[in-house]
Every structure is written in structure tokens, then in C-alpha cells.
Length: 505
Ligand SMILES: [Cu+2]
Image 1 (tube, rainbow, N blue to C red):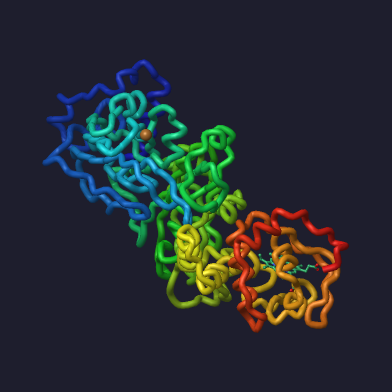
Image 2 (image 1 turned 60 degrees about the vertical axis):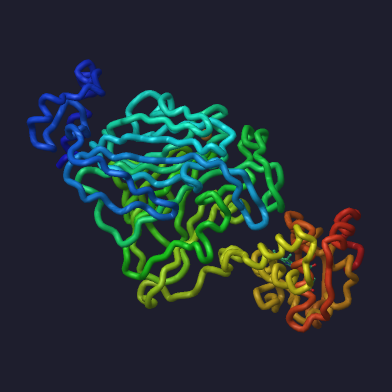
């Protein structure tokens, strides 16, 4: 009902613009004597705040603060601190993030339409940069940015009335704006309609962002921000919740069969728009662009940079549902991938059942790529043992080679040759073996008495230590002859010219 009233009001406003010019004027005389929900001259303004001020409970991603059950507008105090800090962006890769509240995305803010929000923005004394905040849910110049410029060690305060219900992005708007956003300075604020949102079993907070590092994807070590790549809109990473793996393995979102899930999904950008999709699910409802109307039965929804959606679905069948940006190279080659793990009994009438993990995810399905992380650390400190190489190689094999050669190394007859007990592999020199992942392989090969005449594409994206670890794993698995390949061995072969197919492998 209220929404209809509002819609009518907005329509009336458009017809008679002049009558609406005093948008921030508050008819306090009328509202103080009238009941809480009486209409005032401004839509979404349900009168002055009532009761004691409330301190907002903030949600740490992927968690959302609890629903608001109030039936009146209140004064809500939001305390948010900007913290600049180094965190892993991927395994063995660190990045200096600028954050709202210590996380990327920033703390989730939840208020009720009509609330008066007293916003306190602190900037940690350890910060090097000034910051501010532009909340898209604010009616007022700069969305608060003009009033919230805050130097390191300082605090700013401004107050706004949350007039419009919806899910809104907030972000830093200090120059250079693009850089502040690229470093992780964005989050979501939910302005609940007075009647609240329909009850669901789970609410989760997910936000996409694109990141620009001087090194390439998964290149180890500390990676500084790359302004040129950002200007060219060539992200190194496209991520959900700021870090590769923040929604996979032990950090996957969870639900049980028969439950309902609401995702608040934002896109901080700074550059890319998201084609957000949950593999294996259909949204019952998407409040596209974060607005009031829902589209039903949606597969993929577009989330603009600086925009958000609210998506609802129910889960019937157990298994892993994969959150992706369906600009799909971003998912599998830049990190834009998360998992909703659903547990419960099978429902064969709806789906026959078979795990999607290994098919779609490869190494990303594993528990946080732990072995790779260990290897990366060991590599950095120069203490990589053969066993650590094998453990890391196993995870990498699952993500890179197993799609063709199969997780058990048996291959697929007539299509992909086996690596398990491969007599061909056993006879290769070290250099020729290393050359296969680096340069690929074409032409006839006979493996264990069967002929293959196909093409293996080069895997040039793998780093020297990744190739070394994969091959050491392969050599020490499935009855193969054993041995060890070091990253120096790989570097040597990479420096040589690629062999021609006629070279006779
Ligand atoms: Cu900033």
C-alpha cells in the first residue's frame, strides 16, 4: 500500500515539478502532532525520529545484519572506520587494500526507510590517504561525499534521512576516485521498506569488483596497483568479496534443501559491469537495479558498476551452486567465482544428481587451494620440498590438466592420452617433458599401444614453479617413474625456442 502511495506521489511530483522543489524541507509541525506514518510533503519521510538513538549493527561480508522489525522511524548512528591494510588477493599474492571497516566490500549497513542516519566516518591514524563516502542511498549533494572528507586520524559526521527504499552502493569519492574504488572502497546500504522484506532462511552479501595489479593473474608476491591497466580497463582480477577464494572451500555460502536464499549483490566496479549468474539456479525474483519492482524467473542479471540487485531463489537439490560473472573468462581466469554449498537429501524427481564441482571448478573446488598456498609460501622462503611440490602440483593438476587427462590421469580413450603409467611420458627427457605444458603438443603419439593424433594447447599462463609442481606431481603419481622438476629447469626450457611439431615427439 505504502509503495503505491509513494509511486502516486512520485508521479504527481513529475507532473507538478514546482511543487516538489523543496524536497528536503520537513513539515515538522504537521508530523509531530500526527501519527508516525502520516504522509508529509516528502516521500519516505515518516516524520521525526522516535525513541532513543540506535547504533547500527554492521554486517561483515558475506553476512548481512538482521532484519529491522521497527514500526517507526528512528535515529540510527552508523560508525564506520576506513582502514588501509595489506591482505592476500590470491594465494601467495598480497595487495594493499583501502577498506570501509577492514573488509572488501565494506561493512553492510541496514536501516529503515524514513530513518535519520547520523553517519560517523573515521579515518584510521595509520592511513596514508584522506577518504570520504558517497552513499547512493542519500538525497543530497555528493551523497555525503562533500560532508565527509576525512584526513588520517580524523572523524567526520553528517546526517541524512533515508527517503528511498532499496539496495544501494556506497563508495569512496576522493580523488583519484577510480583508484580509491579499485582498492576496495565500496559496500552496500540496504534501506528497508517500512513493512520490511519477505522472510527468507538466508541472506548473504556479495560484491563484485575489478582489480589491477602490475603483475599478472596469480603472480606471487606483493602486487602494487597498476594505474595504466585501470585506465585501459584491463583488470588482472575480477573478484567477489575482494579476494580470490573468499566464497569457496571453507568460505562457501551455505543452505539446506528446501530453504530460501536472498542475495544482496553489488558491483563496486570501478570499470566492469557484471553478468551475474548462479550456475544451477534460477532467481525466483530479481529486484533489478536495486529498485522496487521484481522480475521473475531470471537466469542472469546485469549489475552495472555502482549498482546492486536483490535476488531471491529457493534451493531444492543438494550440491554446489557456482556464483559467476558470466563474462566467463572472468570467472575461470580472473577469479570471479563463489560457491553456495547446499546440503540435504537428493530430489531425483527434480535432478538426477551428479556433482558439478570437478567439471566446472577444477582447482577452485578444493579446500582453499591450501597446498598451493603452502607451496607459494615455501617458494617465497626458498624451502620447497619435493612433497610440498607434489601437494601443490596435485591441486594445480586438478585445475589445469584434469579436464582433459582426467582427475585420475587415465585420459579418455581415443581423445586424450593417459598420463597414468604412460610409457610415452616415461621415455621423455626432462626438457621434452617440460616443453609439453609450455608449448603444447601436436602430431601423432602412441601411448601404451594406442595412437593419438590430436592437439594439446600450450599452457603458457602457468608460471615456472606451477609447471614444476604439476610435473613433479605427475611423475610421482599413478605408477609413473618418479623424479623432480625444479622451477629453474622450467625457466631454462622456457628460454629456448619452441620445438616444431616435426621434431618427432
Ligand atoms: Cu578513499
